[in-house]
Length: 611
Image (cartoon, rainbow, N blue to C red; front, side, top):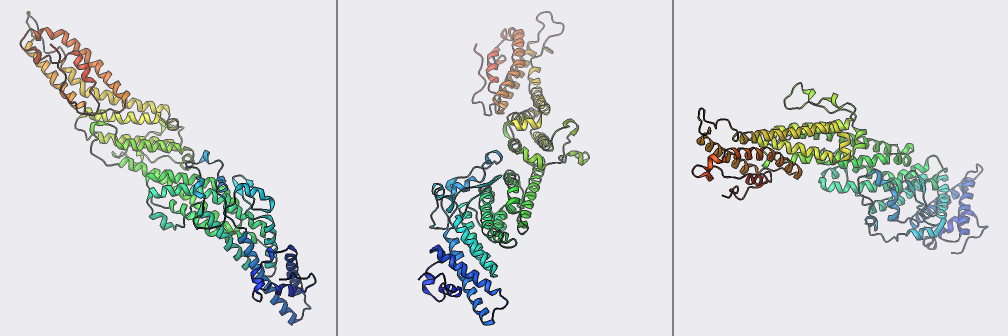
């Protein structure tokens, strides 16, 4: 096609590029040719538009010009679409991972994996520009320069010279009354680009119902991915799209840039937030708390960026949706914590754990509390009221009481954690009553309260919230349980080693009743053997506590036995079959105590003393 003459009438220039009348015009694009041809075409459009505004224009001339403008607008729409398509490339993965430079400080989720975004899922053959290549192209390229406002990173999605062409076309289409067509073309192309970024970020098109039907284990992985992807979408993808709309449309008409922006991103934004909304209204359960808090923290961190990117009146619905989801996530977290407290209190298992060891409920609750303490900053902001304790129930025996006066100055979260520990102990105390032997009931409480204390000591955050005063109170409880165990078990053993009842009244020969002494040794042997057989199968899982308890037992048992044996041994050995009565040496008992609380049956009888 020969280039237009500078003196050609405007209508002739427009008709030369009528793709409906010329195959050559269909095969070529004006804005891909010489810049002089571009300028002549735009000038022709301007001339026709000026002529049409003339009041003295004849009716037949007005008709010809109107027809020419229609042809010109159809052509400019094609040119507009072609420029957009030619300069729409996927955002490179390295750029997407820059969405959260401070994530390591405020997010419990893993960081971006660049490999996750290394290829589009749609089989697109559009080459991905490398960072070095983008930088080499300079101002006239798809540069990866940033305009940073807080954590927002705005990419230059389209080269500046192409932006100028797009703006020139948009100005003329809008002036001619083709605003809707311009917005539709722009929105369809750029929405496709946003969809491509969504695929790279692995954001699935899931309805609220789809999300709520997924198993929680599957949802956990999707939440982690959503948190990372949402930061990239808000701070990079949507922010960059807004910047592009402003560069092309700002100032051309009233809020046209906002209209084009919403045409592009409203659907993807709704798709993005639908996932978080589905989580916020899903069925509550304790295992969901921490991912809900991750989601809450991530969204809270994004709210200023959402308000900045979606600041216009037309995008108010997006801001409102984000704020409502944040509020529902906060309410879900509070509700889960309250329901967890009730579940701990009402946990119904009645079968005693073998050996009086730490109950699975204790391990679960304390590990859960330790995780809660990792989120103390968030939960301290979300939880502003004290827990609903037993004082509400007016002496209800199924609910414990907690004295808040002793805990003055504690945060509401700390009070909730202490309350959970109180109701855990209350539940455990009830479970201890299912043991038929009071000794193992006390050992069970000792093990469990000791475990609670050790978990608190092992978490600096938890210890800070619980406080040393309450920790000392807990330590006193497990030590009291240990003392109660020893009394329940060893008083009856040591009772056999008393002097009372062994001396014969009025006798001046020996003063000791050998028959009573033999019965005493037999009773001791029988009781100790039964305690040894039974309590070797009991378990104290903490090695230090186990050793301390054995030492305490030995300190009472061994001196008492040694003294008793020293005083009365000769009376037994002077009679028949002394081995039937003095079955064990002091050393035998010392060895036997080492079998206690190992949690397994002793494979052989107590070792008999040597003659």
